[in-house]
Image (tube, rainbow, N blue to C red; front, top):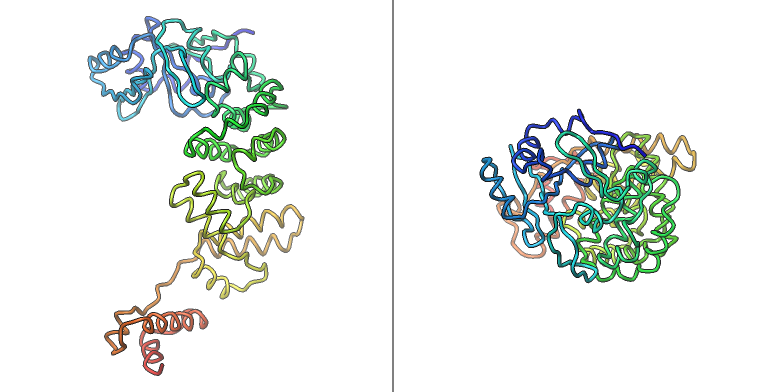
Length: 410
């Protein structure tokens, strides 16, 4: 199959990229763009981070960057990686390398000047494509037909690639979610199924990073289905209680024109049980804000579809806008799937109300009660809570002075 050219592609015209490529002698064949940028450009997908491969040794990359007036950071220099920064844009530059030793998580590498050898250590054939500054594409392993067919295929023997780094099991399904078409590569599926126990040796951060990126795909449902079939989903996310709700959430996101939300999709496949949420957050070491969002969702009951705005405002005040929005959107997705038009319309009204909701500030504090002569201690906090509940019951329609008067009669 004839290789296309990327000549004239907009991402190659970026001044910062041109400066780095020139500094690292791309015109002489020393440095090429590799991986995701080339893959996405060829597919017509948006190009994000730009990584480079080079025959230059790491210390030579640093020298060449400094000679060109560019900043360099030795982000992974023992593995040949230097980050070169031009006009505020970081470019990860890695010396061509081959694996000497791997243990399923880490690798010992040696540097090489052989592009095919460098390509041979990569995970999938669609990631083993290179291009130079002029847009000429290089395909050392013949992976372009896989890219054109959107076939996610391991480089070489799938089991050997996976044993080098068990994260490649999750990457296989993540790339399938983003770029795959049809049925996943059969040999890749078999290898992932046979070696799925290796997921247990991976760090929590790496597992969650891959799962989150998979859940952020335009439609992760097919990939999750194959993960379930191969048993890898239960190894990576044992807290799941099924994936059937994913499709309806994706459909609702598209209908409502909101971007993919990995955490919302996670909520669709795990039970809203506090103990299960705590277990998941601890096991995967979720960020504090991620954990708080999941916990708030689990602790917030789903509002009835006929709930009045006044009662909805009270729920929003107590639970928070984010948690209530998550609950309502998942309910909307379920009602859409059922074809219940009246329920869908009601959920949309509720969502619109909650999204525009501005939480009022309770006009009284403990200091106000102390100033009014109340004694400090547990009873003060109890009184403050009772007054806030009374304020909620009348839809926030009691003034500060009226609350103080109520407190005085207590």
